[in-house]
Image 1 (cartoon, rainbow, N blue to C red):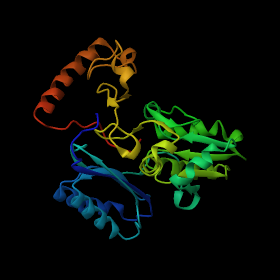
Image 2 (cartoon, rainbow, N blue to C red):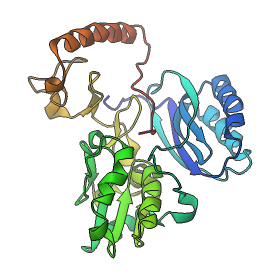
Image 3 (cartoon, one colour):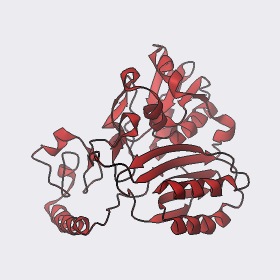
Length: 313
């Protein structure tokens, strides 16, 4: 989706907080009712370990949500990141109960106790410019494909569940080193630092607020982030100043596409792209063509098209 020329109509709020929510199930219905009443859409994940999600609505609606969250006992102050969208980036509102607010699949990881050292965006460049620092991108390969920090290691994981296995193979080379980790909004890298510290890697840091906060606060001319940041909504990506990016989405495989992808002979709108063409059959592509016709009809009628739930990846 390209940046729109009109003023943004929606406030997009990304949030998370690791907290001990003993009775998180009871929080679901009041939270969903408020969001539906205020016209907020998106996804919120609730677990005993806290809250995570991205939602969008009017500025007033988002203020009401923040006030509601502030009144939840034991939650404390979530990490909030605000941006804007010219069109509603979600189709519906969902509040889901989960075992983890970001799924690593490892028991006993508690970022409240074991997380690494927060690094403010203004101090991040100095840390990652140190040649002794190992920089690790904790996102998945379809996210890193359109942008990452200069000199960062890309584990090329398909899901966050794969990150512990990737790490286990490199523990010896990471122990005794300074490790700087980052992700989209801060939650995955915070949990990843806790995991590393529990594996005996002590000198671990993570970017507070993630790439989103960095792109919001660090001037473009000082930035070491190259490309755009993938986001899990209809904007697809954002750039510096959190402006809507140029990346679009392959509706067949949900891989973000850059300009060079769209001019490939393997690209067909809603049907295939260079990242998935050889993994799909002709029957698959015909089915996607039928779906694409339905999408085009929905767009003609002004209905937004969802791309899936954010953040639980």
